[in-house]
Length: 319
Image (cartoon, rainbow, N blue to C red):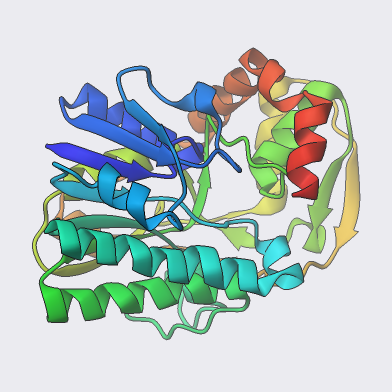
């Protein structure tokens, strides 16, 4: 198949694009590089530097495409408190432009990078897909809004979709700037011998799922008919303080822990019920936390030139 991957220079998008190439698909990556990295794009991909807000370029990128995988989004939760309209514009309005371009180009399949943040503070653990949706911040609300758009475009125009709600994704390629996700922040700290900041005293209960497993799910659902929603996680949780302990054991050196207090927008318990995707798709996670952390540490050790460039870090943090 010919696949357009929006945001394919980012963390999960670049990993999915590589696996699509491995699977024999022809891949075009569209990314404006505001948060993505050209270096992460597999050389087998056709690369277009562009933005979903450019409707003419979007239609050009859609030519000859059989399906879309949509990762392009503003994704730093803390920034959604400071500038909520950025998340409405980029995640909702530009998402609608993407769907319009698909409609005009008669592209009938999309896989959407959604988030467990649509649930907010869940009523049940593990969380099934039909749990109430009560986002705690604009980022989660924007993901849910796009899922609603997918529902409308399916019923009105026959665009088939799969929304994959990630729980705590981690792994190689997570070069988000400014870094806010726990695992990349902690791994960098271990490499540079800086303190680890632990919020809520590490009492939060989380479901960490490795990026290779996430990428495999995207390939497995490609081409599905209908309107589909699936959780992606390990299906069991771990306390954040125990993730730090696992990392410390892995790097075999003492770590300095700083109490970061509380942080807005963080549910205390979040674990995926993955029974639906197991039964309907046949997907299940394969990478345990220790192996995933080991691959993540090796990635950061081997790519210090990407995340230790102060000028790039400062530029992205200020943008």
